[in-house]
Length: 359
Length: 181
Image (cartoon, rainbow over all chains, first blue to last red; front, side, top):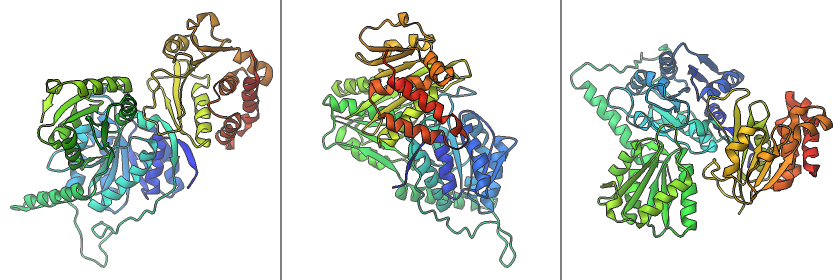
Protein backbone atom coordinates (compact mmCIF):
# COMPACT_ATOMS: atom_id res chain seq x y z
CA UNK A 1 0.00 0.00 0.00
CA UNK A 2 1.25 3.46 -0.83
CA UNK A 3 2.00 5.87 1.98
CA UNK A 4 -0.97 7.82 3.32
CA UNK A 5 -0.72 11.59 3.21
CA UNK A 6 -2.56 14.20 5.24
CA UNK A 7 -4.34 16.39 2.72
CA UNK A 8 -7.16 18.89 2.29
CA UNK A 9 -10.13 17.79 0.20
CA UNK A 10 -9.60 20.51 -2.41
CA UNK A 11 -5.97 19.48 -2.93
CA UNK A 12 -6.82 15.78 -3.06
CA UNK A 13 -9.42 16.52 -5.73
CA UNK A 14 -6.93 18.53 -7.79
CA UNK A 15 -4.36 15.74 -7.51
CA UNK A 16 -6.99 13.21 -8.56
CA UNK A 17 -7.73 15.23 -11.70
CA UNK A 18 -4.03 15.30 -12.57
CA UNK A 19 -3.75 11.55 -11.96
CA UNK A 20 -6.69 11.07 -14.34
CA UNK A 21 -4.76 12.85 -17.08
CA UNK A 22 -6.60 16.17 -16.92
CA UNK A 23 -4.17 18.77 -18.28
CA UNK A 24 -6.43 21.79 -18.82
CA UNK A 25 -8.00 23.93 -16.15
CA UNK A 26 -10.03 27.07 -16.76
CA UNK A 27 -11.52 28.94 -13.83
CA UNK A 28 -12.44 32.17 -12.12
CA UNK A 29 -11.89 32.75 -8.38
CA UNK A 30 -14.66 32.28 -5.83
CA UNK A 31 -14.65 31.15 -2.20
CA UNK A 32 -14.76 28.36 -0.99
CA UNK A 33 -13.05 26.59 -3.87
CA UNK A 34 -9.95 28.75 -4.45
CA UNK A 35 -7.61 26.10 -3.04
CA UNK A 36 -8.33 23.97 -6.11
CA UNK A 37 -7.29 26.73 -8.52
CA UNK A 38 -4.32 27.73 -6.38
CA UNK A 39 -2.98 24.19 -6.29
CA UNK A 40 -3.50 23.56 -9.99
CA UNK A 41 -1.87 26.89 -10.91
CA UNK A 42 1.45 25.46 -9.72
CA UNK A 43 0.86 21.76 -10.41
CA UNK A 44 -0.45 21.85 -13.99
CA UNK A 45 2.60 23.61 -15.47
CA UNK A 46 4.78 20.97 -13.72
CA UNK A 47 3.06 18.18 -15.65
CA UNK A 48 2.96 20.04 -18.96
CA UNK A 49 -0.61 21.22 -18.57
CA UNK A 50 -2.34 24.56 -18.92
CA UNK A 51 -3.76 26.60 -16.05
CA UNK A 52 -5.76 29.55 -17.24
CA UNK A 53 -7.58 32.08 -15.09
CA UNK A 54 -10.39 33.21 -17.35
CA UNK A 55 -12.10 36.59 -17.26
CA UNK A 56 -15.34 35.07 -16.01
CA UNK A 57 -17.13 31.80 -15.31
CA UNK A 58 -18.89 32.09 -18.66
CA UNK A 59 -15.49 32.26 -20.36
CA UNK A 60 -14.20 29.33 -18.24
CA UNK A 61 -16.93 26.93 -19.26
CA UNK A 62 -16.67 27.88 -22.92
CA UNK A 63 -12.90 27.42 -22.86
CA UNK A 64 -13.57 23.98 -21.41
CA UNK A 65 -16.04 23.34 -24.23
CA UNK A 66 -13.31 24.20 -26.71
CA UNK A 67 -10.68 22.01 -25.04
CA UNK A 68 -13.16 19.11 -24.86
CA UNK A 69 -14.07 19.52 -28.56
CA UNK A 70 -10.36 19.19 -29.36
CA UNK A 71 -10.27 15.92 -27.42
CA UNK A 72 -8.59 17.08 -24.19
CA UNK A 73 -9.45 16.09 -20.65
CA UNK A 74 -10.40 19.43 -19.12
CA UNK A 75 -11.97 20.76 -15.94
CA UNK A 76 -13.24 23.84 -14.20
CA UNK A 77 -14.28 24.51 -10.63
CA UNK A 78 -16.43 27.13 -9.00
CA UNK A 79 -19.13 27.63 -6.39
CA UNK A 80 -22.89 28.24 -6.54
CA UNK A 81 -23.10 31.69 -8.21
CA UNK A 82 -20.28 30.82 -10.63
CA UNK A 83 -21.88 27.47 -11.46
CA UNK A 84 -25.12 29.33 -12.23
CA UNK A 85 -23.22 31.45 -14.76
CA UNK A 86 -21.89 28.27 -16.38
CA UNK A 87 -25.29 26.73 -17.06
CA UNK A 88 -25.54 27.95 -20.64
CA UNK A 89 -22.15 26.43 -21.47
CA UNK A 90 -23.02 23.18 -19.70
CA UNK A 91 -26.21 22.89 -21.72
CA UNK A 92 -24.20 23.43 -24.93
CA UNK A 93 -21.64 20.83 -23.83
CA UNK A 94 -24.35 18.28 -23.05
CA UNK A 95 -26.09 19.04 -26.35
CA UNK A 96 -22.81 18.71 -28.23
CA UNK A 97 -22.01 15.53 -26.24
CA UNK A 98 -18.74 16.91 -24.93
CA UNK A 99 -17.06 15.53 -21.80
CA UNK A 100 -15.51 17.55 -18.99
CA UNK A 101 -15.42 17.92 -15.22
CA UNK A 102 -17.13 20.72 -13.32
CA UNK A 103 -16.51 20.92 -9.60
CA UNK A 104 -19.04 22.72 -7.43
CA UNK A 105 -17.80 23.45 -3.91
CA UNK A 106 -21.15 24.87 -2.95
CA UNK A 107 -22.00 28.05 -1.09
CA UNK A 108 -25.18 28.98 0.69
CA UNK A 109 -27.91 30.35 -1.49
CA UNK A 110 -29.91 31.58 -3.24
CA UNK A 111 -28.07 34.71 -4.30
CA UNK A 112 -24.65 35.52 -2.94
CA UNK A 113 -25.48 33.57 0.23
CA UNK A 114 -22.41 32.76 2.27
CA UNK A 115 -19.42 30.44 2.21
CA UNK A 116 -20.47 27.81 4.75
CA UNK A 117 -21.29 24.23 3.82
CA UNK A 118 -24.71 23.36 2.46
CA UNK A 119 -26.39 21.11 -0.11
CA UNK A 120 -28.75 23.59 -1.71
CA UNK A 121 -27.43 23.00 -5.23
CA UNK A 122 -28.75 19.43 -5.45
CA UNK A 123 -31.59 20.33 -7.80
CA UNK A 124 -29.38 22.46 -10.04
CA UNK A 125 -26.82 19.65 -10.28
CA UNK A 126 -29.15 16.70 -10.79
CA UNK A 127 -31.76 18.29 -13.06
CA UNK A 128 -29.30 19.39 -15.68
CA UNK A 129 -29.27 23.00 -14.50
CA UNK A 130 -29.33 24.69 -17.89
CA UNK A 131 -31.96 24.68 -20.63
CA UNK A 132 -33.03 21.62 -22.55
CA UNK A 133 -33.49 17.91 -21.99
CA UNK A 134 -30.21 16.76 -20.50
CA UNK A 135 -28.51 15.51 -17.37
CA UNK A 136 -25.12 15.88 -15.77
CA UNK A 137 -23.33 12.89 -14.29
CA UNK A 138 -23.19 13.94 -10.62
CA UNK A 139 -20.89 12.43 -7.99
CA UNK A 140 -21.03 13.35 -4.31
CA UNK A 141 -17.93 12.48 -2.24
CA UNK A 142 -18.10 12.29 1.56
CA UNK A 143 -14.40 12.06 2.45
CA UNK A 144 -11.08 13.47 1.33
CA UNK A 145 -10.21 10.08 -0.16
CA UNK A 146 -13.37 10.21 -2.26
CA UNK A 147 -12.62 13.80 -3.36
CA UNK A 148 -9.54 12.27 -4.97
CA UNK A 149 -11.04 9.01 -6.23
CA UNK A 150 -14.28 10.47 -7.58
CA UNK A 151 -12.46 13.22 -9.49
CA UNK A 152 -10.76 10.41 -11.40
CA UNK A 153 -14.03 8.52 -11.78
CA UNK A 154 -15.91 11.63 -12.98
CA UNK A 155 -13.38 12.40 -15.72
CA UNK A 156 -13.51 8.78 -16.81
CA UNK A 157 -17.32 8.64 -16.92
CA UNK A 158 -17.48 11.96 -18.75
CA UNK A 159 -15.27 10.60 -21.54
CA UNK A 160 -16.97 7.23 -21.63
CA UNK A 161 -20.47 8.72 -22.00
CA UNK A 162 -19.50 11.96 -23.76
CA UNK A 163 -21.31 14.06 -21.19
CA UNK A 164 -20.18 16.69 -18.66
CA UNK A 165 -19.76 15.36 -15.12
CA UNK A 166 -19.99 17.27 -11.86
CA UNK A 167 -18.47 16.76 -8.43
CA UNK A 168 -20.88 18.20 -5.86
CA UNK A 169 -19.13 18.95 -2.58
CA UNK A 170 -18.96 21.72 0.00
CA UNK A 171 -16.60 23.63 2.30
CA UNK A 172 -16.50 20.77 4.84
CA UNK A 173 -15.08 18.42 2.23
CA UNK A 174 -12.95 21.09 0.59
CA UNK A 175 -11.30 22.36 3.80
CA UNK A 176 -11.08 19.19 5.88
CA UNK A 177 -7.84 17.21 6.04
CA UNK A 178 -7.84 13.44 6.22
CA UNK A 179 -5.28 10.79 5.33
CA UNK A 180 -5.38 9.99 1.64
CA UNK A 181 -3.96 7.11 -0.31
CA UNK A 182 -2.74 8.61 -3.58
CA UNK A 183 -1.77 5.31 -5.16
CA UNK A 184 -2.55 6.08 -8.80
CA UNK A 185 -4.99 3.77 -10.48
CA UNK A 186 -4.51 2.77 -14.09
CA UNK A 187 -5.86 5.57 -16.21
CA UNK A 188 -6.83 4.96 -19.78
CA UNK A 189 -8.21 7.81 -21.81
CA UNK A 190 -10.54 6.35 -24.44
CA UNK A 191 -9.91 7.17 -28.09
CA UNK A 192 -11.92 10.18 -29.29
CA UNK A 193 -12.40 9.76 -33.03
CA UNK A 194 -15.06 12.49 -32.95
CA UNK A 195 -12.64 15.18 -31.69
CA UNK A 196 -11.75 18.19 -33.83
CA UNK A 197 -8.06 17.64 -34.39
CA UNK A 198 -7.60 18.93 -37.93
CA UNK A 199 -9.20 17.26 -40.96
CA UNK A 200 -6.05 16.51 -42.94
CA UNK A 201 -6.37 12.98 -44.33
CA UNK A 202 -9.91 12.45 -43.10
CA UNK A 203 -13.43 13.70 -43.59
CA UNK A 204 -14.28 16.99 -41.88
CA UNK A 205 -16.17 16.63 -38.60
CA UNK A 206 -18.68 18.89 -36.90
CA UNK A 207 -19.52 19.26 -33.23
CA UNK A 208 -22.77 21.12 -32.72
CA UNK A 209 -25.90 21.39 -30.65
CA UNK A 210 -28.09 23.02 -33.31
CA UNK A 211 -30.59 20.70 -35.00
CA UNK A 212 -33.06 22.48 -37.25
CA UNK A 213 -34.23 19.78 -39.63
CA UNK A 214 -37.59 18.12 -39.10
CA UNK A 215 -37.40 15.48 -36.35
CA UNK A 216 -33.63 15.84 -36.00
CA UNK A 217 -33.70 17.31 -32.48
CA UNK A 218 -36.16 14.71 -31.23
CA UNK A 219 -33.89 11.98 -32.54
CA UNK A 220 -30.93 13.59 -30.78
CA UNK A 221 -32.86 13.94 -27.52
CA UNK A 222 -33.86 10.25 -27.61
CA UNK A 223 -30.25 9.31 -28.29
CA UNK A 224 -29.15 11.29 -25.24
CA UNK A 225 -31.99 9.80 -23.22
CA UNK A 226 -30.79 6.30 -24.13
CA UNK A 227 -27.35 7.31 -22.86
CA UNK A 228 -28.83 8.42 -19.54
CA UNK A 229 -30.69 5.10 -19.33
CA UNK A 230 -27.38 3.26 -19.85
CA UNK A 231 -25.84 5.35 -17.07
CA UNK A 232 -28.77 4.42 -14.83
CA UNK A 233 -28.24 0.72 -15.60
CA UNK A 234 -24.48 0.56 -15.30
CA UNK A 235 -23.00 3.40 -13.28
CA UNK A 236 -24.93 3.79 -10.02
CA UNK A 237 -22.58 4.07 -7.05
CA UNK A 238 -24.02 3.70 -3.58
CA UNK A 239 -22.84 2.87 -0.08
CA UNK A 240 -25.25 0.60 1.74
CA UNK A 241 -24.95 0.00 5.47
CA UNK A 242 -27.95 -2.24 6.09
CA UNK A 243 -28.96 -4.79 8.71
CA UNK A 244 -30.87 -8.03 8.46
CA UNK A 245 -33.85 -6.59 10.38
CA UNK A 246 -34.41 -2.84 10.35
CA UNK A 247 -36.79 -0.43 12.08
CA UNK A 248 -35.73 2.55 10.01
CA UNK A 249 -33.73 3.42 6.91
CA UNK A 250 -31.77 6.67 6.60
CA UNK A 251 -30.77 8.29 3.33
CA UNK A 252 -28.19 11.06 3.09
CA UNK A 253 -25.37 12.16 0.81
CA UNK A 254 -22.10 14.10 0.83
CA UNK A 255 -20.76 15.78 3.97
CA UNK A 256 -24.13 15.36 5.70
CA UNK A 257 -23.76 11.57 5.53
CA UNK A 258 -20.79 11.82 7.89
CA UNK A 259 -23.05 13.19 10.63
CA UNK A 260 -25.58 10.47 9.77
CA UNK A 261 -22.85 7.80 10.10
CA UNK A 262 -22.21 9.01 13.65
CA UNK A 263 -25.95 9.04 14.40
CA UNK A 264 -26.36 5.50 13.05
CA UNK A 265 -23.51 4.27 15.28
CA UNK A 266 -25.13 5.99 18.27
CA UNK A 267 -28.57 4.55 17.47
CA UNK A 268 -27.18 1.02 17.11
CA UNK A 269 -25.35 1.34 20.42
CA UNK A 270 -28.75 2.10 21.98
CA UNK A 271 -30.35 -0.96 20.42
CA UNK A 272 -32.08 0.58 17.38
CA UNK A 273 -31.93 -1.39 14.17
CA UNK A 274 -31.21 1.22 11.53
CA UNK A 275 -29.78 1.14 8.04
CA UNK A 276 -28.22 3.87 5.93
CA UNK A 277 -28.06 4.31 2.19
CA UNK A 278 -25.68 6.92 0.81
CA UNK A 279 -26.04 7.75 -2.87
CA UNK A 280 -22.54 8.39 -4.24
CA UNK A 281 -23.85 9.09 -7.73
CA UNK A 282 -26.72 11.60 -7.41
CA UNK A 283 -27.35 11.11 -11.11
CA UNK A 284 -27.77 8.27 -11.84
CA UNK A 285 -29.69 8.01 -8.55
CA UNK A 286 -29.73 4.66 -6.68
CA UNK A 287 -33.52 4.36 -6.90
CA UNK A 288 -33.52 0.57 -7.12
CA UNK A 289 -31.42 0.18 -3.96
CA UNK A 290 -33.68 2.58 -2.02
CA UNK A 291 -36.82 0.82 -3.28
CA UNK A 292 -35.50 -2.60 -2.24
CA UNK A 293 -34.36 -1.49 1.21
CA UNK A 294 -37.52 0.54 1.90
CA UNK A 295 -39.67 -2.48 1.04
CA UNK A 296 -38.05 -4.29 3.97
CA UNK A 297 -38.25 -1.35 6.40
CA UNK A 298 -41.35 0.73 5.75
CA UNK A 299 -39.90 3.90 7.30
CA UNK A 300 -37.38 6.16 5.59
CA UNK A 301 -35.76 9.26 7.10
CA UNK A 302 -33.90 11.56 4.71
CA UNK A 303 -31.35 13.95 6.21
CA UNK A 304 -30.15 16.89 4.13
CA UNK A 305 -28.47 20.28 4.45
CA UNK A 306 -31.18 21.98 2.36
CA UNK A 307 -34.97 22.14 2.59
CA UNK A 308 -35.49 18.68 1.12
CA UNK A 309 -34.20 18.49 -2.43
CA UNK A 310 -32.99 14.88 -2.57
CA UNK A 311 -36.10 13.98 -0.57
CA UNK A 312 -38.07 14.27 -3.82
CA UNK A 313 -35.90 11.59 -5.44
CA UNK A 314 -36.16 9.42 -2.34
CA UNK A 315 -39.97 9.65 -2.35
CA UNK A 316 -40.04 8.75 -6.05
CA UNK A 317 -37.82 5.74 -5.33
CA UNK A 318 -39.36 4.18 -2.21
CA UNK A 319 -41.61 1.13 -2.19
CA UNK A 320 -45.32 2.11 -2.29
CA UNK A 321 -46.74 2.71 1.18
CA UNK A 322 -43.41 3.68 2.74
CA UNK A 323 -43.61 6.27 5.51
CA UNK A 324 -41.25 9.14 4.72
CA UNK A 325 -39.84 11.87 6.88
CA UNK A 326 -37.29 14.62 6.38
CA UNK A 327 -34.72 16.20 8.68
CA UNK A 328 -33.62 19.36 6.89
CA UNK A 329 -31.05 21.97 7.91
CA UNK A 330 -30.58 24.62 5.19
CA UNK A 331 -28.50 27.78 5.15
CA UNK A 332 -25.23 26.55 6.58
CA UNK A 333 -26.59 24.69 9.60
CA UNK A 334 -25.09 21.25 10.16
CA UNK A 335 -27.29 18.59 11.76
CA UNK A 336 -25.53 17.25 14.86
CA UNK A 337 -25.41 13.46 15.27
CA UNK A 338 -27.44 13.84 18.50
CA UNK A 339 -30.15 15.78 16.69
CA UNK A 340 -30.34 13.08 14.01
CA UNK A 341 -30.41 10.39 16.67
CA UNK A 342 -33.36 12.07 18.44
CA UNK A 343 -35.23 12.12 15.13
CA UNK A 344 -34.45 8.42 14.59
CA UNK A 345 -35.76 7.62 18.06
CA UNK A 346 -39.00 9.58 17.53
CA UNK A 347 -39.67 8.11 14.10
CA UNK A 348 -39.02 4.50 15.15
CA UNK A 349 -41.39 4.81 18.12
CA UNK A 350 -44.08 6.89 16.43
CA UNK A 351 -47.17 5.68 14.60
CA UNK A 352 -47.99 6.44 10.98
CA UNK A 353 -49.18 9.97 11.78
CA UNK A 354 -45.60 11.05 12.45
CA UNK A 355 -44.59 10.59 8.82
CA UNK A 356 -44.76 13.73 6.71
CA UNK A 357 -45.48 11.71 3.64
CA UNK A 358 -46.84 8.28 2.82
CA UNK A 359 -45.56 7.36 -0.60
CA UNK B 1 -12.12 1.32 20.59
CA UNK B 2 -10.33 4.64 20.77
CA UNK B 3 -12.27 7.85 20.08
CA UNK B 4 -10.69 11.15 21.07
CA UNK B 5 -11.84 14.56 19.85
CA UNK B 6 -10.19 17.90 20.52
CA UNK B 7 -10.79 21.57 19.83
CA UNK B 8 -7.73 23.78 19.33
CA UNK B 9 -8.64 27.42 19.80
CA UNK B 10 -7.16 30.88 20.12
CA UNK B 11 -6.35 33.85 17.91
CA UNK B 12 -5.26 33.74 14.28
CA UNK B 13 -1.45 33.88 14.14
CA UNK B 14 -0.88 31.78 17.28
CA UNK B 15 -0.36 28.58 15.32
CA UNK B 16 -3.65 27.02 16.43
CA UNK B 17 -4.35 25.29 13.12
CA UNK B 18 -0.75 24.10 12.92
CA UNK B 19 -0.81 22.55 16.41
CA UNK B 20 -3.92 20.61 15.37
CA UNK B 21 -2.34 19.58 12.10
CA UNK B 22 0.80 18.23 13.79
CA UNK B 23 -1.33 16.11 16.14
CA UNK B 24 -3.52 14.88 13.28
CA UNK B 25 -0.46 14.01 11.22
CA UNK B 26 1.00 12.06 14.16
CA UNK B 27 -2.26 10.11 14.51
CA UNK B 28 -2.07 9.21 10.82
CA UNK B 29 1.49 7.93 11.34
CA UNK B 30 0.11 5.69 14.11
CA UNK B 31 -2.19 4.18 11.46
CA UNK B 32 -5.27 5.68 13.08
CA UNK B 33 -8.26 7.30 11.45
CA UNK B 34 -8.16 11.07 11.82
CA UNK B 35 -9.91 14.23 10.65
CA UNK B 36 -8.74 17.85 10.91
CA UNK B 37 -11.45 20.42 10.41
CA UNK B 38 -10.64 24.16 10.50
CA UNK B 39 -13.25 26.75 11.39
CA UNK B 40 -14.15 28.21 8.08
CA UNK B 41 -15.58 31.65 7.65
CA UNK B 42 -14.44 35.21 7.14
CA UNK B 43 -11.43 34.71 9.44
CA UNK B 44 -8.36 36.91 9.42
CA UNK B 45 -5.20 37.42 11.45
CA UNK B 46 -6.03 38.47 14.99
CA UNK B 47 -9.54 37.04 14.76
CA UNK B 48 -10.73 33.82 16.33
CA UNK B 49 -9.11 30.65 15.05
CA UNK B 50 -9.99 27.07 15.82
CA UNK B 51 -9.86 23.58 14.47
CA UNK B 52 -11.31 20.25 15.48
CA UNK B 53 -9.29 17.05 15.42
CA UNK B 54 -10.92 13.63 15.77
CA UNK B 55 -8.72 10.59 16.30
CA UNK B 56 -10.24 7.13 16.23
CA UNK B 57 -9.39 3.48 15.80
CA UNK B 58 -12.48 3.17 13.57
CA UNK B 59 -13.91 5.03 10.62
CA UNK B 60 -14.86 8.58 11.63
CA UNK B 61 -18.34 9.97 11.01
CA UNK B 62 -18.73 13.59 11.99
CA UNK B 63 -15.50 15.63 11.91
CA UNK B 64 -17.00 18.00 14.50
CA UNK B 65 -16.95 17.78 18.30
CA UNK B 66 -20.11 18.64 20.22
CA UNK B 67 -18.64 17.53 23.56
CA UNK B 68 -14.88 17.33 23.03
CA UNK B 69 -12.60 15.18 25.20
CA UNK B 70 -10.08 18.01 25.19
CA UNK B 71 -9.91 21.76 24.60
CA UNK B 72 -6.64 23.55 23.90
CA UNK B 73 -7.18 27.25 24.54
CA UNK B 74 -4.81 30.13 23.90
CA UNK B 75 -7.23 33.04 24.26
CA UNK B 76 -9.85 34.33 26.68
CA UNK B 77 -12.74 34.33 24.16
CA UNK B 78 -11.97 30.75 23.16
CA UNK B 79 -11.97 29.62 26.81
CA UNK B 80 -15.37 31.26 27.31
CA UNK B 81 -16.66 29.68 24.14
CA UNK B 82 -15.54 26.10 24.68
CA UNK B 83 -15.05 25.27 28.35
CA UNK B 84 -18.76 24.62 28.88
CA UNK B 85 -18.79 22.01 26.13
CA UNK B 86 -15.96 19.76 27.34
CA UNK B 87 -16.96 16.24 28.29
CA UNK B 88 -17.13 15.66 32.04
CA UNK B 89 -13.72 14.49 33.23
CA UNK B 90 -12.16 15.84 30.03
CA UNK B 91 -8.98 17.79 29.59
CA UNK B 92 -8.61 21.58 29.44
CA UNK B 93 -5.29 23.22 28.61
CA UNK B 94 -4.86 26.97 28.82
CA UNK B 95 -1.90 29.19 28.12
CA UNK B 96 -1.68 31.32 31.29
CA UNK B 97 0.55 33.81 29.46
CA UNK B 98 -2.70 34.95 27.80
CA UNK B 99 -5.52 33.52 29.88
CA UNK B 100 -6.18 33.98 33.61
CA UNK B 101 -6.69 30.54 35.28
CA UNK B 102 -9.30 32.19 37.53
CA UNK B 103 -11.59 32.22 34.49
CA UNK B 104 -11.89 28.43 34.58
CA UNK B 105 -15.35 27.74 35.99
CA UNK B 106 -15.49 23.98 35.57
CA UNK B 107 -14.30 21.82 38.46
CA UNK B 108 -15.14 18.49 36.82
CA UNK B 109 -12.21 18.61 34.39
CA UNK B 110 -8.52 17.98 34.45
CA UNK B 111 -7.33 21.56 33.94
CA UNK B 112 -3.72 22.24 33.03
CA UNK B 113 -2.56 25.84 33.26
CA UNK B 114 0.74 26.29 31.53
CA UNK B 115 2.69 29.53 31.00
CA UNK B 116 3.47 28.36 27.50
CA UNK B 117 4.63 31.64 25.98
CA UNK B 118 7.06 32.27 28.86
CA UNK B 119 8.43 28.74 28.60
CA UNK B 120 8.80 29.10 24.84
CA UNK B 121 10.66 32.39 25.27
CA UNK B 122 12.95 31.15 28.06
CA UNK B 123 13.73 27.74 26.60
CA UNK B 124 13.69 28.37 22.86
CA UNK B 125 13.99 32.14 22.64
CA UNK B 126 10.76 32.44 20.68
CA UNK B 127 7.45 33.14 22.44
CA UNK B 128 5.56 32.29 19.22
CA UNK B 129 6.38 28.62 19.78
CA UNK B 130 3.97 28.48 22.70
CA UNK B 131 1.69 26.36 20.54
CA UNK B 132 4.28 23.59 20.38
CA UNK B 133 4.95 23.82 24.14
CA UNK B 134 1.23 23.36 24.75
CA UNK B 135 1.06 20.54 22.26
CA UNK B 136 3.86 18.75 24.14
CA UNK B 137 1.94 19.06 27.40
CA UNK B 138 -1.24 17.89 25.68
CA UNK B 139 0.49 14.79 24.30
CA UNK B 140 1.77 13.83 27.75
CA UNK B 141 -1.52 14.51 29.53
CA UNK B 142 -3.79 12.84 26.99
CA UNK B 143 -1.47 10.06 25.75
CA UNK B 144 -3.59 10.11 22.60
CA UNK B 145 -0.47 9.64 20.44
CA UNK B 146 3.16 8.98 21.33
CA UNK B 147 5.73 11.77 21.58
CA UNK B 148 7.90 9.95 19.04
CA UNK B 149 5.17 10.05 16.39
CA UNK B 150 4.55 13.76 17.02
CA UNK B 151 8.26 14.39 16.47
CA UNK B 152 8.15 12.34 13.28
CA UNK B 153 5.07 14.29 12.13
CA UNK B 154 6.92 17.57 12.73
CA UNK B 155 9.88 16.33 10.73
CA UNK B 156 7.56 15.57 7.81
CA UNK B 157 5.62 18.84 8.02
CA UNK B 158 8.72 21.03 8.50
CA UNK B 159 10.71 19.74 5.59
CA UNK B 160 12.29 21.57 2.68
CA UNK B 161 12.15 25.34 3.06
CA UNK B 162 10.48 25.05 6.47
CA UNK B 163 13.25 22.86 7.92
CA UNK B 164 15.01 25.82 9.53
CA UNK B 165 12.44 26.11 12.30
CA UNK B 166 12.39 22.39 13.07
CA UNK B 167 15.06 22.16 15.84
CA UNK B 168 13.40 24.99 17.82
CA UNK B 169 9.95 23.50 17.30
CA UNK B 170 11.11 20.10 18.54
CA UNK B 171 12.70 21.67 21.60
CA UNK B 172 9.54 23.60 22.38
CA UNK B 173 7.51 20.40 22.05
CA UNK B 174 9.83 18.47 24.38
CA UNK B 175 9.84 21.31 26.95
CA UNK B 176 6.06 21.18 27.02
CA UNK B 177 6.11 17.40 27.31
CA UNK B 178 8.52 17.51 30.25
CA UNK B 179 6.82 20.43 32.01
CA UNK B 180 5.52 19.59 35.48
CA UNK B 181 3.34 22.47 36.75
